[in-house]
Image (tube, rainbow over all chains, first blue to last red):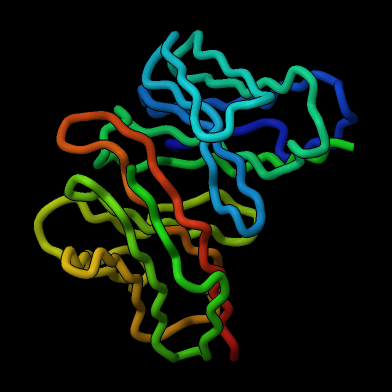
Length: 114
Length: 116
């Protein structure tokens, strides 16, 4: 089944404890992206990647890191999480990142930083 | 730069009534427009999209949207609401044009409630 998977689905952590949220797609997509969703703000893009080893900042990149060493994986790293990073996170992928492409979303990771 | 405005953060309709969710966009190039739906505790799923051609676009679950360039709108409609339509709906415009790559810009979302 074609899908985007994220792990973990739920995570509670404490300020300053490094964490990684994994994202994997099995559709051979070139484009991958991370969003955060907050009430009343919709989805805001954190980072995106047009291809392996090519990443770029989205609208809200502060406090986050990403890497794209393999085509299928795009992990999101929080080196020193803070409470304002408590949010619902979505990974997405599309075939090429072209304007007409459909983005496919993972199920989300709900992160709470205490 | 592209942007999206969704009018109404909450919309409530009765089962069987018309659903109308409003979306206006701003774009310096001919836009590519999308509607996504998010059911509770799930990721986003594509409902429909407009790229080129026919301005009335039909999607899944009986939804459709009409691209109106003169009004810079892409409103989502469904003739008869069903309880299962209760969800949050996001309108989005793509930054990419023609053969270029680009990111999606999302509106803030409209939560649809359906009353029995």
